[in-house]
Every structure is written in structure tokens, then in C-alpha cells.
Image (tube, rainbow, N blue to C red; front, side, top):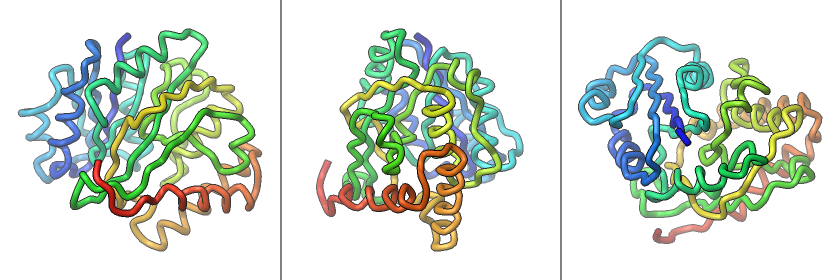
Length: 251
């Protein structure tokens, strides 16, 4: 089973080494690494050329935003399974992609996801937030539930059936896509009860108050578009994050 791992990056030189190390450490034997660069000027391209994954497809071209870049990467991927790995994230251990392949050996499953840890940007050993996703139930969508997007791996057929990311969303395109896959696409998901990805705090969606407001508006738009609830769903989605904060703890 070839797994394509897609990275959409723009000026990610500072965090690329840790991310690439986690990818190169994977024990799964068939991994394709697809990099979609938006025109980096900080040494990202030179670093990738010198230290990139041995099975890497690198392209640098302008894009209209993160979801356009992701879509370009997915279109270039040739694996039967596709997942995303952002430049700020790392796979939590060498067996993550093996877990994915083992779970997707079941032909009745369209995709898999697992648990996610948010870590401090200045100290990746310090866990700030622990997201234990739990098994998927359709009723959870009205409570604002979603699988942790960085841990999601889908069969290529899901994108062919349900489409790629909607580029009219600037921040919440991942939430919209997952609601679309799970409702109109009738996606069947398997859950891996393991931490699959460690993600640095401080992403685009919580970079500023204005970003938080925009994300909430886009979340609400997606909720209404896919008819999974209303304002209560948006409130529940945001409140569900609070128990995930664990304070200072060591990996």
C-alpha cells in the first residue's frame, strides 16, 4: 500500500528538519512524499533538495492559499492513501504509517484518524493540549466533533468521490471538507487510539483575534452548509477543546 504524504509549505525552513526526520523514520516500506511549495525564500527549497525524503516529488509554484496548495499536492500524489503533514508537525513515532496501512487493510474503511498532541512552539517536549478523539459516531457532528485533521488519512477514492478542499474557505477548509466527507460522502472512518501527530501551538486559526473571528464564521458556514446543527454546534465545538488542555506535562 503506497501512502502519499503531502506537505504544503511556504517558508518552513525552521521546522522542516524535525518534520522530515519523523517522516524518514517511518517503518512502512512504501511512502511517497509530495511537497507543494508556494515560493519560499528562506532556504526551504535548498534544504529539501539536500535533505528531502528519498521518494520526494517537489514542486514550487504560486498558489492562492493553503487549501489551493494542498489540492495541488493531492492531485500530484500517486498513492492509494493520502494524508497531510504540515511543516510544523511531526509524526509521533516510527510506526504511525504502519498503523494507517494496517487499519486500511480492511476494505470497508475509507479512512483512519487518531489522537493529536499540541506542543509548545519553543519546547516540543511540553504538551499543552491532548486531543483524544475517540471513535466516530454520526450523532457527534451536532456536538461539534471532528477527527483531528493532521491525523487523517483517506483513500484516494474519497477525494474522487467527494472533491478536494473548498478554496473559498481560508481557515476552516479542513472542517468543511471533513463534514462534507462524513455527510454527503458517507465516509466510513476507523479510529487508531494512539497519538499519531505532534503539532506546534500557534497555527493560522489562532494567530490573532481577527483570525479567531474569521474561523468561527467559517466554521458556522460549514455547519449550516452541511446541515449538522447551528449556533449550538459552533459553541459546543469550541467548548470541547477546554478539557484537552493539560498544562505543563512531559512527553
